[in-house]
Image 1 (tube, rainbow, N blue to C red):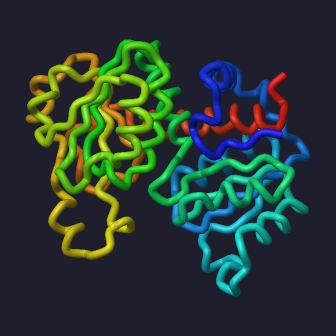
Image 2: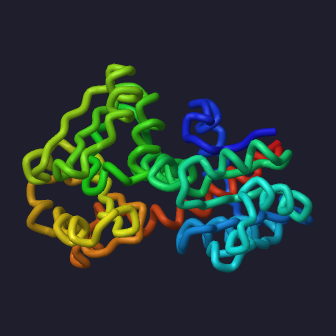
Length: 305
């Protein structure tokens, strides 16, 4: 039985299998409309979510399955003090697969250790977000037709941004990938990512504060919001929240085939004027999330044969 807790739980071959299956689903959605008949997905979301939760639910419904779960800790027995392990044990009796989001790092792993059904990490604190990573990889694959030989600019909150941490881990396994890390000093990538992923694997990277300085070199610009919910005090959030705002002016020297991505939600780090730029793929990226989660659910349940 397989779980997905960390992006590197999937081998490069596993990722390739899932992305190919997502492509097949996109090409012939009716063929997959009953693959999960009789199967149930439990969405255990202890933290608010729009895209991740709804895309998981849409994915299971489009596969013919059904859904159950909760959308906040307040609507679960966590308010009564029930442990994650006990909640998972109970939900296992009602569902075939679990997708869990939790503000504490490691919570989905705890759940996975106590049940015999697949558990998917739908985001744990500032740690990992592996299904967003699969979404990002599918977006890059579909829009650029490759996952190697790219320069990826990651901009904004690189300290707390779990989507950034997960994407670096995943893309570091492909050939000739280079990272440009754009952030204020206070929001730089954590040392463990630099040391255990980038330096340990001799992945080229540079850290800069000015987006404009590196824009001409980028194949992908991955924007992130400064996350209010990860800050310990409001003053630091207010000081840093508008560090980077992407607009037409900042794109003047960018490549014509640049891909602008964002895991969403955005606040104001991408100006609305950029939405109509053909290089902006972040809304398409959200759509890809549903298809890659359909493929992942099938793969984890052994229904991809």
